Image (spheres, rainbow, N blue to C red):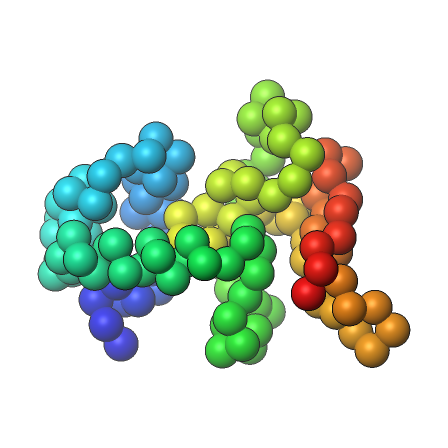
Length: 136
């Protein structure tokens, strides 16, 4: 497992680290800040590692999973990320729904993957802020 993946795995079980990553991610902090935070927690990542991970995450729409991630969803990290002042501004999934590199989803965010009768993905906020389909 590379250092970036290891950092994200640790963040799933470390609320303090996840909060720090969320704060940096939400503020649009640069790679240098993420690299420095990772170093505080004993991870040796480079700005290039961060950029590559960001590019990979950026190629997917919010909530879209890679095939190998599907098995991890049931055991994945979630938290109550609901904030009516933030969530009320959006009509579709955004950073607060999925967290830093989509590593910690809000408890209220749902994605229904396509099935044989419907090929579109349904994105829903159970708090009622959005409910829409995206072509698969």
